[in-house]
Length: 480
Image (cartoon, rainbow, N blue to C red; front, side, top):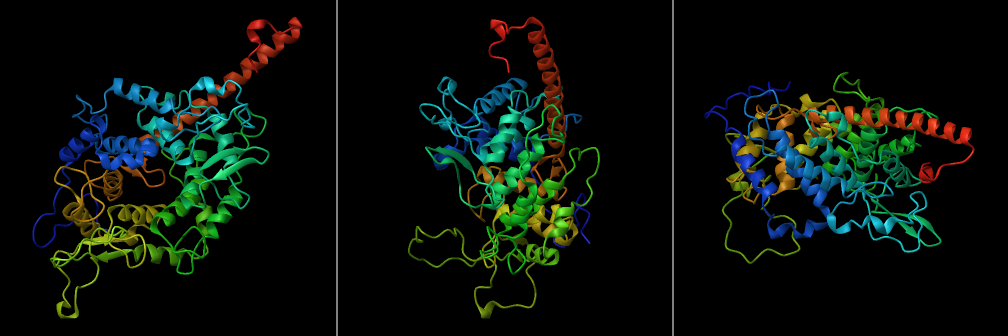
């Protein structure tokens, strides 16, 4: 049985380290207000993702509005408006959002653009992609005015985005990342076969579509949810994990995406007011016991590596920044007594080293399977994150002793929130944002659907007037 996460047990050698919220907020303030280090230049095409990591982390660390320490918010109302304008400026007229300002094409370039066919004399350079669209919608909800949560999606073209999303689905049920119109060949779906895109598609659909029947205002043709579910379910591997296909190596990140996508396809539209029942699609996983075992097996007792001997510089092709940290260095060091205190780390694949984000992928996947108690006592995993992965300037690193970065720092906080860390907002394991933000998404979606009904009534009135007049006035020429 899992330990009480609000009051972690005190280890034998003294109290556990505390999460220094003030230090972490200083780190995120620096990331928000100052230029990021040159190491982030390779992520120029993923600015929307960087913004999500920063804003989401600040919201997780910020006390609820009914707490006392909210006089000087890190993100002021004026900054919220500016950031929302920046996000909306990345919306593509054909649906979706571009992931970076460098991919935004001037709107006047779309004067002849036809959203459904994508055709015009000169194909525009702007391009939306799946991750950029998900991060944009999450950011709009995270940056919503607290007094107007219903307006979080103001400016979002819900219909075109859902149509664009539908075009991203392949015949086998999987999803790609981007669309490109090839002359004489129609739409090309790019981005490879990646379980992350399946998760992103399920997330966007849940955030925007709503429960609208054909013929009702706001109805948009749905993606093929059954084919998507079958594609995901067929990707479980022989040892229980999930990968891009059943013949590939399983990965904890893919397991999270597969499980979360299935959960979101079944998820009720209002989960913050009505606790969701166990999603039926998860019961269709071929071997639930095997995936549960595989996920819990990603945990291991972390061992500090021995002092390194002088050696040549590591190969630039190596993707492991730290020596192996889950095996004893030699048989002579073998001991039947575990280290004290025990630190529990997680990896993403069998026989790989510890990494901050994998504690999140594993724990959140178990959470979405309703198997969170199997993770056991939080204390050793929490100790590992705070003692080995937290940096002295704030944030979390990818590996022990490394520098902090916004990706691992964000997911270090999300997993600590799932563990019930005091002082952090409670997180939704399916959408990776605070539960309060999920409530904003529900209200914003409802407002878009309400406006669709009003617009539909307005069109009926306009058409009735046209019929009575017999001609369409000049000022109505552009009205559909």
